[in-house]
Length: 389
Image 1: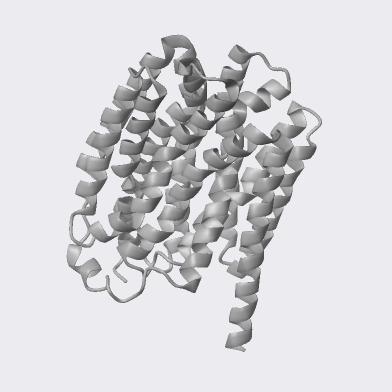
Image 2: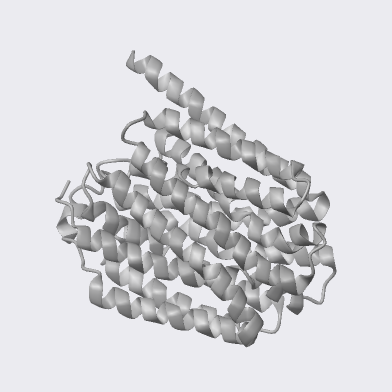
């Protein structure tokens, strides 16, 4: 593997921070925007919320491996910048729609043109080294998490002070600023080094499928809640205006614990066997997910959620760091599709289950899905050790 290029690692991570900030700036008020636009019943509106919020990530999950393969033939930096431009335009247009079907179409187009983090991951993996892969992936992950941390409270404030159109315009302008930043500071890595290895490994095998499933379920746990926050706050008898403002603060708080946990656990990864660490943090996060159903009040609900994200978020970089130091763009794209799938299906799972059951059943269903993935990983890890013995 080539020598580590910290400049690229740093500036690609900073660019990813800008993307995450803008997306989560919009994400926190998007369900309220949809409820205001909707002429449908409460149950039908919940389905629209899930579809509209999940569409971009779901479509990007299907296209992510293709994006990874494109980095073998075209400039990853150029792909990264084109994706930024596309998102900026689409975010601006979303603020001026007047119907839910048109909003859904824009979100689908956003997903088709999305997947740009795959190009960023390819640049990171090519600019890192085997020894630094874990920390560099942790930096990339935490850059996204920092954007998720800062974006929601500012987005909620913008929506309540500038209105929805003004808030969408601010988010679009920030993506344009990130595009300029990327143009000047992100440097291309030597293209030949990636071409030489892009056919050396298969994109899909047992190990990558297990890694995909773990990252998917972890992402679902992280991303399902914003789409049902109006309902969760209503269950605690919180008035809507207060709920919009509280949503930003709440998302900021549990995203902060996710960032702290990712940093600490990625540093611990070099001292503990990776499969044991993944199983431990996965079980802790899933257990806390189940405890959400037992929350007697909003304070305990917030506390359980903050503890949950502090451990489950680390699963993603821990799994990625075991792959990206020596795999080609197609494999990175396939693994990255797990996050898109989790981002996309998380809201859809949440709103679909809630539309026909209750919040408690929703929390238990997502916890059960995570347990299945962890059991599969534990059995696979045990089988690998037995084969090695």
